[in-house]
Image (cartoon, rainbow, N blue to C red):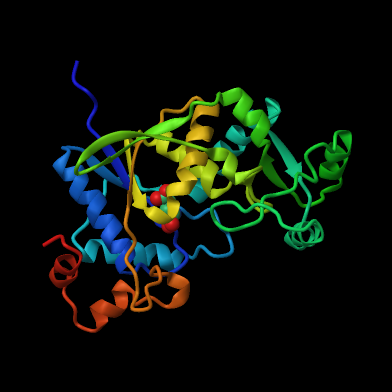
Length: 286
Ligand code: GLU
């Protein structure tokens, strides 16, 4: 029996124009897929109704085509699959692994500030103190009243269910090795936002499984999130892909390129007369 061909993906969020950092990630995914004899899918991660814009989706497709990258159809748009995320979320809720949280960000901040030093998650956000974890029947009443709420993973319950030996295989040019995952450093992470029945974490593990992704290649800024993803994959009975976390491109100040900090977009570079060949060569993909 032959093993299935590798499947990779490039999964941008359409909340701005693509910059060189995205180009690097897209080119690396395409290059690795070609070298492994597999394919690379494009996924539009548009779960954020406020920040995702159709014009940015069009921009992504235009910029990638300009770079010479094409993708198999259909391209998955996460906003079209909310019912699937809801079902995955309901499964976790039904098993007692998630609870509704009615705290606003301000309330959480105030509570944490009054309690002195509190540990932070890998994104430097203070860990949630668990205020809503044991609301019992009051939680259902508040949901019935329509009180806005997120859903949080009950990390202790989730770890009891998943078992302590979580990990994944990390791969690079030098080979592959096992990495231990410690999702507990995220505390009771939000797995569904107030406005949609998912978070980045839940949608990404669901979609990687649905699309048969075998190798996840993305920036080091998401390396710590992988620990949480491995936990969710284990809880949901999904395969754990191999992972590669590539270095991030930095700007002149040594900070990660970011849409919000006005990193020069591929569209800007194109308008300034840069060729796709020049961009590819600059990023090491001549
Ligand atoms: N949509 C995420 C982003 O644009 C990437 C998700 C991933 O590769 O897992 O940062």
